[in-house]
Image (cartoon, rainbow, N blue to C red; front, side, top):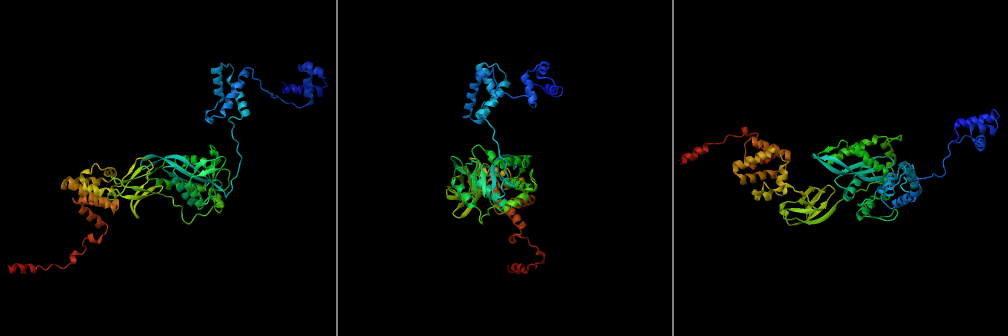
Length: 498
């Protein structure tokens, strides 16, 4: 190939010094045709080959093409790479060529056959009155001292970037609805269009193209709030890339270091504060803050209905011999007096309420595992008082005992020492029954005062507690010194009569 300095020499020799083509060809060693091409046009450098020859790889090209064609029907993550093609050729066909040659051909063949080509995206600016995206993520938090896996509900405006996130124990339909309801309240309205993956809690069946068969309850929910759902194509999560990025952003910024909270509700209050603070953030490439952009789109949101969606489920049940009702594969206790009764159950996303007729007889935090027991000790106290020998082995007492104050253990020991084990346990249960109507801190204070006074009966503890509550029936006499002195002469008359 002709070099730049040779190109310059040929043109200068001919145009400046008037040398003939034949003379220049003799001096440079190039052909006369090459000299003529140089004199006719500009320097063109290297000319790429129209067709790349593969002298060593040639016999194997059809084999490689066959492998790549078959890859079209296989999962994307289990297709041939150039390195895998090279190793198969060596192992199965004793190929002696270089890996770089195989790499070059496989790259060209994939482009020609349309295998593994990367998708190209269109730059777009979302409209202020249209869309928000919804997705779930996974995160960890320490709740009550125990590390817990949680599901992170995320909703993000495509225009402003304003987002709402909240943690749930699961991704069930009630959690999905609750996340929407709270997000709508956070935004002050409903986005006309919401974009999802093909969530099983929303989509019963994916049809050809954009058509979907909705879950019946989801269809009622979207109809109640009047928004239009749009679902991504299968395996195309990038179609809602904003909220996909939000999941990662929340994990990196809101959940690092791993947050600690006593309850899930406390954790969600922290996340809500983080979402509000994000309003002052300015997204790269935009002049206005998130809140400023949101104010522009807020006017286009669909107004919230006057009454919120009733996000609850109801079912019937029967109390068993353990005074529990099985609900969603878990057990919840009711007062022992209702054993073997039929009851109605109302399930909220975070709690379970049990009714006998119209009377609420129990309320529990909802469990999302299987075969778990939620036992309220108060439901069993009367029964245990009738059977004091079961006190130490009763599961509700054993669970409660792990967290109650140490002063209760001391009071139990005193009652048993003074009155014996059976009667002492009965008296102690009478103290535990006070938790039904009084705050735990007040009872603890009363028990500590009773221990200092060396009392050994439940009535004394109750008297101290109600005195502290300013109950008039238990108030001490404050003006006893001003009372008139008793007339003792009557006793002298009685004695004289004898």
